[in-house]
Image (cartoon, rainbow, N blue to C red; front, side):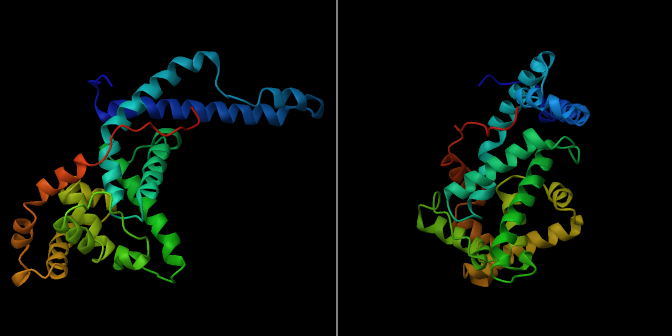
Length: 261
């Protein structure tokens, strides 16, 4: 795909504008339907297809192009966000596509100044919703305090091919969800503590504390000497390199989710 010079936020402005236009057309359709007489019903059914008008086509194409650019930029990162937190690759793909569908076809009001932060905020909410469904079956109340492994979502082994990777993946799934999420956002998604705080709606100091506690919890699960996170980084040849290796195994060549455009 040819690289678009526009920023993420500029591209999403195009998507949002069309989403609002389509919603307005749907409201117009509903108003027209309320005004119909019973004898008009057959004609109403004939035109119950696309709510758009011919003059809306350029806006539709522009939105599709902008959405495809955003999808191309963020598919790998978003899929990486889900992959160590769900049972298998298919569920990971489901959540990835659900998030993109909501972003590209349903929501029309971006919260915060950054599209990236907004996208991962929606992804975080989708993940928590998925966890809540699983947790309700196990009568868990505060899912943030439980490890992913205890919720019973299984584990994706798509990218944990070497023994050291398997150890780290397993350890991440055995610490509380709130620590796993903040750890992976910080070290894998390259998000700053400030961005994570804005995304999760919690104080910056809390995020920094959770990053520190996540390191300690991981060191304990990995049985590192003196709970040294430095030993963890040395054992796995740095988290940055680990993240790059995992990303390289994700396939970015996927089709965008289909919506109602």
